[in-house]
Image 1 (cartoon, rainbow, N blue to C red):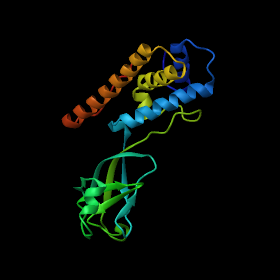
Image 2: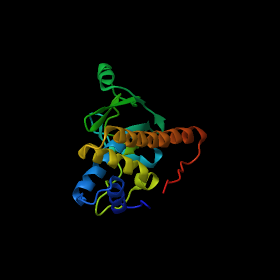
Image 3: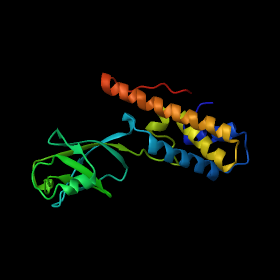
Image 4: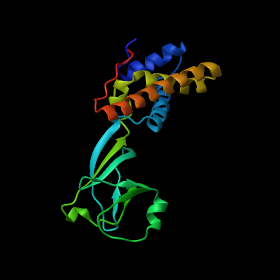
Length: 205
């Protein structure tokens, strides 16, 4: 069975479970739970985005709504160190070219404080891992789903298995398959990062 759309994914989940009595809404829940697990675990180039950050006078910048995790932050192309907020705050107040950053709620705080860079020619650039658009009736696919539909399938089967009290050993097999695929994707991404190649993974469907 080809799995290239949200609708096909839900059909596949029902087929694997050998159930024809599951509502479309319930199958959608299983997919949503799978997405939660995927986006908590997976960090691959397909999920990377680049954004220019604007700071305020306190040296704070709001992070994008789809932000999952910062990969790199640069000030005028110079990389900044990522440190804990506790470490950053313990350094005290200072102004100037930033050397480090930390997350504070929905914002990033920089040290030293670069001030309001919107009034200067300086540039803060962040490469970050972003959450792809969620699959839905109006979003048939996304970049991660097209790359690894089997990851979504096994994630949804795990969620369905818990809901339906499927034998633990079967849930365990699905969960292990999910982890194996996710780990393989991230291992390949790390290898590509070192070799400089472009990530390209063949779908299993």
